Image 1: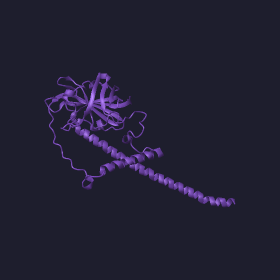
Image 2: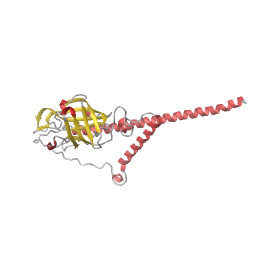
Image 3: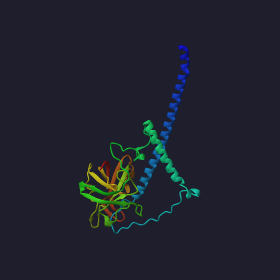
Image 4: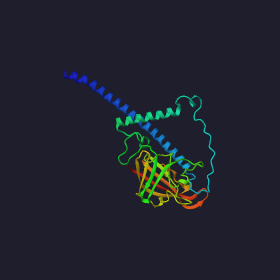
Amino acid sequence: MARTRHRRSRPAGRRLRAAARRTMRAAARIHRRSRRLAARIHRRSRRAAARFRRVAGQAFSASVTTADPVTQARPVRPVPRQPAFGGRFASGGPGLPVLAIAAVMLLIVTMLGVERVTGRSVLPDRFVAGLRPPPKKFPVLSGSPPTQIAISRIDLRATVHRVGIAPDGSIAVPDTARAQEAGWYDQGPTPGQYGPAVIVGHVDTTTGPAVFHGLKELHDGDEIEVTRADRRVAVFEVDEIQRYRKERLPVDQIYGDFSRPRLRLITCGGRWVGGATGYADNLVVYATLVRAD
């Protein structure tokens, strides 16, 4: 009887081992697919960041404009846009772009499920900001435009409003009449989101110092408080201050870091050369989010 039970147990053991091998192979296939999918999503997020950097680079090709009332930028004729798709996709139905976005969101949700089950991270942090809990070492905020900036080191407290791209392709800045206000570049992240939020302002006008006249006095470690429309206060710490020739702005260095929430304050500086250039340089303050109140 004992021999019979032993012989009968062998097929059952083989079946269990075969099932285990099949399970391991299936898990390996799922892991390989999830890694490939994560790589594709990561490439897409990098392309999106690259598009932002290209737009920002174009916006700063003429750099932050100055407050010289004599110089007027020459308007650029807008380029007519062609429809992205033709035929039946041009009208009616959700269209391919909407379907593509829905597919990407479905992939993200699926990968988050894979992460929850396997405990393995398969999505880049910058791509799922707001979907995962914020890392403990620094906060990450949802999108909300800034309304005020305060820097106690230089006794600065100013209103912040939106600016976009000027007709000549440079980044727009507040009008001369609002030279004591700063402008948030609304084509990029809001302060507290992953990536570099950009706030620009005049250094001076023909009547005297302007909002960002004191930026050159900042030091590493100084705090910058940005109040947002949701009443949260994003507190940034200055990392470094650099001055660049306007034609040599390091676009990737200024706009390419999406590893955590950043802030860039940009104004003019250096020697006054007049004309469309104004000041020869741009002063850039690099700062990193350290807490949110």
